[in-house]
Length: 280
Image (cartoon, rainbow, N blue to C red; front, side):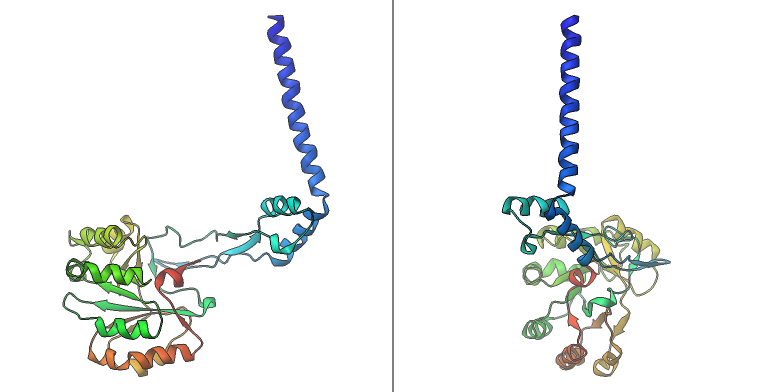
């Protein structure tokens, strides 16, 4: 028993020794010139995150902040032997109100500070989108094709090609009815065969049942703030940063799309896919 208590006492002293040694190291580190300079730089370059705007059942994504990862930067510079701003390691700061995994609101736009818009092309089962693809690829922009479930079934190779080329495939379900039992089948094809991690649904008016179902399968539901079916060149003139613009596919769109894209770019706006537009 005496040996047991002796061993226990030794281990207690040893653990306390490690504890106080660690505390001493932390205190010394705080007074290190490298650490002091890193903290000064963090105060200078730190940017606070911007929360998502959530109103009723809608959401507009926020913007991540940025700060220096103090411990990693210190460790790297300590090995180097002195402060060097080229060795600074930054990390993102996620907004408290974030769009990440927030699937139960309608996404009505991107953050206006990013100077971006996103284009959605609504693809019915029998639509031919070859000309649209040629135009957007020639213009070197990334867009979104929201497609009917039957189109998905019949165009697996084209779907995979579009995803590989950084376009997004959205799910219109079958005949735009998300309560159709085959909606899940189309969702599975896009994510498993197309290997697209993020899924998207589409609604222009409130449909709580559809919103709930899309949320259940971790899909964002997009509600565009510009819905264009004709007079594309005239109607695009009200475009602004953060807009999500949907287009019905027809011959008029094919004729006007080059000018529409050129006009958007002339406003200083980038055209990106939804993943990029909505990224915080």
